[in-house]
Amino acid sequence: MLRFGMEPDEFTYGSVLKACAGQQSAGSGKEIHGRIIKSGLGLEPFIGGALVDMYCKCGAMKEAEKIHERSDPQPMVSWNAIISGFSLLQQSEDAQRFFLYMLEAGVKPDNFTYAAILDTCANLATVGLGMQIHAQVIKQQLQSDVYISSTLVDMYSKCGKLQDSELMYEKAPKKDLVAWNSLICGYSQHGLGEKALIVFEEKRPEKVNPNRATFLSVLRACAHKGLLGTGMSYFHTMQKEHRLEPEIEHYSCMVDLLGRSGKTEEALRLIEGMPFEADAIIWRTLLSICKMDGNVEIAEKAASCILQLEPDDSSAYILLCNIYADAGMWGKVSEARKRMKANRLKKEPGCSWIEIRDEVHRFVSGDQSHLRCDNIYENLSLLVDEMKWTGDMSFEFHL
Image (tube, rainbow, N blue to C red; front, side, top):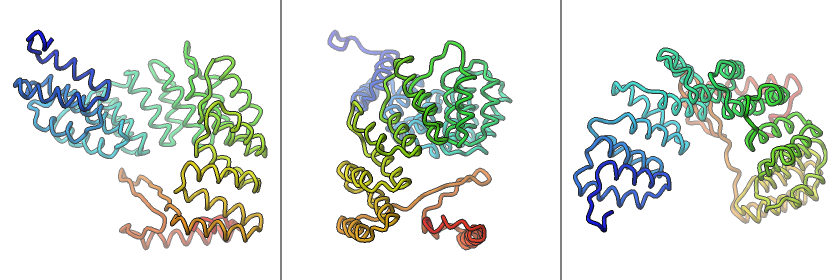
């Protein structure tokens, strides 16, 4: 087009920017952006929205926000693109910050906005904000939107509100694969494996076939409950009936299931028979189950494979030390600790978070920076005393 001397208009540029976004080609997108500025079309709302969307899908959020700020008026598509962009990049707090900024600017969210912000509530498990968004969805009569209804199922599921999640699923205008998977995954992740299997068997939407994500949740449910026969059956059904080749995550679930069932050697054979190379995650799963049954030989092999793939992984040394200690092999414990020290490896601090009154509080192991630190540790001490009183000494391995 350019070779023939034809000048692109805003719709041409919009289509090209959409192609750049689809290919996540930030370099080409910036080149087109430069041409748009030279052409004088940079202030057109349609072009502004397309530029914001392109930069968001390429992960260039600062550029996207700059263009959005310069736009007048600021089109709805750019508000939604930035919130969705932050959400896709797992920057959920930034997405929520921008959503609040949107409300302060007097912009009314639409169904795409609500679906994207509900996704961030699911990622952060901020159920308080999620419920507020749900209330606004009802007020605007958007609950019949298929995408929103599926996201509500997912949000309540990830926040542990499983009854609400199932209620949303039952009320959904159209039960799709996403909502079904979310419900199964929620029950599986929260330790209700039997319920997850019931949803899989009895609440399958019409004309919907399970995919790899479905079977991953089902296999996890079987692993958590130690249902070896059921898990093996689903693992074969996945391949034979549904023509779905297992990925490494499915094999990892089966390794976990075999290990929990006391079949550590079978778990090792499964790993060695996989049609692809094992990663550090699956070897770490095997090492963890060796901790349960005390199989030192397989533990050493698993730890060796982990350290070949990830030499800076301190967790492999720590788990191996614990296995040696359980077996009374104190010389081996000393050797492993010396190797860890020689490689200058330290245990990564644990991190957790909790939502209280719509505010997320983060805690790192050994951290004393929280404003209510003294009160927190005082209550922790009381809980430890209660555990001692009941005879539970597991805290000794974590404090």
